[in-house]
Length: 102
Image (cartoon, rainbow, N blue to C red; front, top):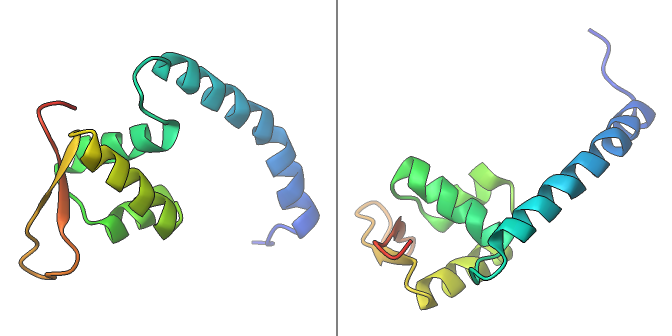
């Protein structure tokens, strides 16, 4: 199978970019008044599906930067929407779980 060229890939990006913008705008509209960002919603959805995850797991699954996930988790902790739980396999990488608030 022939691999896609850079031009082919960029053509694909140009095709899907408007769709991504529309989806993001719609989610932002739906979230108005909730004090939840699109990124936070993605994290909450991932935690809902998996029941618990570490920040590195969320970073990988959501294909987001580590610093962004850390910042959003901090905001979600402060808002009481997630809480930390012990990770027996890695003391410095706690699990995050949804609270009843979320």
